[in-house]
Image (cartoon, rainbow, N blue to C red; front, top):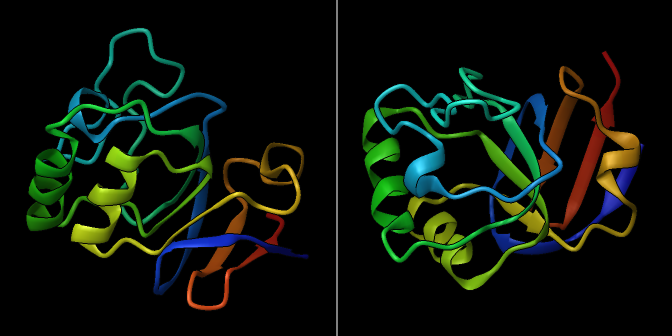
Length: 134
């Protein structure tokens, strides 16, 4: 199945989906040394985002988010790609400076179609999300 979307940061990537129906920030939500969600009692606590296609609602800002994203990039702990409903300015800046293929404003609700563990290809150059179920 293919879904159209808006390109935030160009590029192509594929990987296993990690789905979280909530907001995300590189600053404070993900440990840049390990690539794991580090918030106690978070639904994804301990989940690795390394080389995954991370699906979430929107960024939740933090002016240091791009610095945390850069640290994760340098450590090789970034998601392979990002799909979100809306990329706010802080998230957009973080993905652009780190080069993570990212799309937002998908033409269909990804939370109805994508499950954690699904294989996802993101072609942000063309604005296409391809879903292959487990």
